[in-house]
Length: 204
Image (cartoon, rainbow, N blue to C red):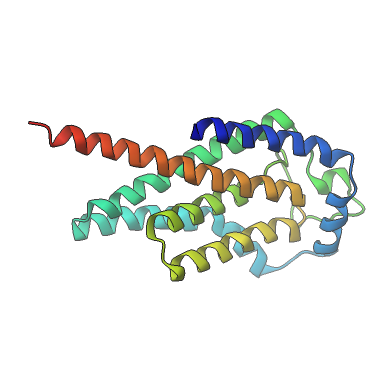
């Protein structure tokens, strides 16, 4: 059932991309966010953190789990690793299927990218990765001092992609949907995997 729901979200995302081509709202919002010279060290570092923050959390979970001999923490690390793989696989599949041009390439006189852009635009891979990470942490730890900062960080990554002129708002929205959806899917898959493993282990 969860897989069917996730596939439906992916279908909605593809439909959304087609709508965005015929509407001006997407580009109008982006123009309001993207400055003419988007050279900000802060936002560039924020966007780059979408790759190294998840990696640090995964390694930290494995390391902490081994040192404390805590299987649950190690399991959380595996879950995030699965989530990263799932979210990026879906992101790349949709990018290739939709084949949407980057905003700075489509509107070179209206949108200004911080650096040369390449690849497809929809959805935002940085955003999907950031929200996948935040969703996994929220599902595994359920503490406000973890949930709030990680989601604020994920939202900052999403904003940075628009500020730097490399993604439309709908690209970012697509990344959010994929990140959250893959988070729940990976949570379900991991719980099922480890539950079955433990169940087999205790059998006489």
